Image 1 (spheres, rainbow, N blue to C red):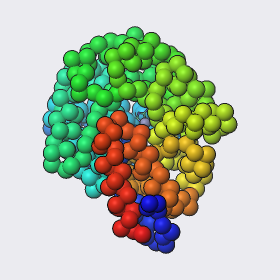
Image 2: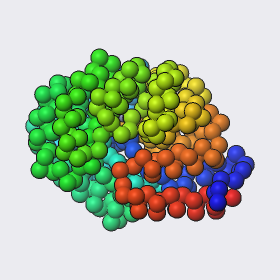
Image 3: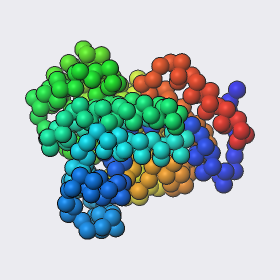
Length: 346
Ligand code: ADE
Ligand code: ZN
């Protein structure tokens, strides 16, 4: 049965909000809302460079990725205790549940915290406990992907990998994030090879601001299973073919791309072009506290601006489950829920 029937456009936002979906690209430190930054700063006796939540929010005017990262790393510096990491992640899961996100794979940046003297045990214990509680209390399953900061060296990535090995069973995958241009994937060839031997799933940010060449090396050198962002791939026809034929998922983040000036406006976003070319694109929020919206904001605003329709919504949600790192039986169950949801809108 094809669950997708024609639908009036005015029911589309309702469908986008109601459909079950997975989030595969969320930096948990990027879910830290200004209110929580101030609350944690107070709890931990940290002086803030901003006098109010409103003043901090006003600083969220970015011109490119680096202008955002500077503020994002400063915001993360209020995270000190295991409870801080728990509170941040649980607050995200509450928002996710409200958006009918039924599964989320959370990126975290251990080096941002260990560089400030916070132990990796504190970070992972807090995040993992939030994942356990989110499943028990909200019915949202969550898993953790630890990222290497690509502006740091490969040697430092090896060191942080070593520190987290006792927590191997609590981490599903390895990612690569931070300033892209000038830090190509191949800089991390050996550490990714080691992570692969250790049995982790592999992903990397590539083609966010950087060129299609970075997407090629993420695939061919790092051997990643998904590309985070990847929107610059549309500049390279051979790469588009490769991504489509190998069913490599792209975790696209439209509001992030808008706020970081990757596209001048949402109407110019290439999500439809990627889907029309047969790529396994998904929609995600990246750093929702900084970019003006969580999952359903990304879906509703992008659909309104680009003219995407119900069949695209189905494809995007289905792709999110198929590209996730959950067991085949759970994927099947979520896709059945998705079909059931679409049937109610027929
Ligand atoms: N870290 C947090 N958000 C990021 C993004 N959009 N790109 C690269 N690194 C990030
Ligand atoms: Zn990202």
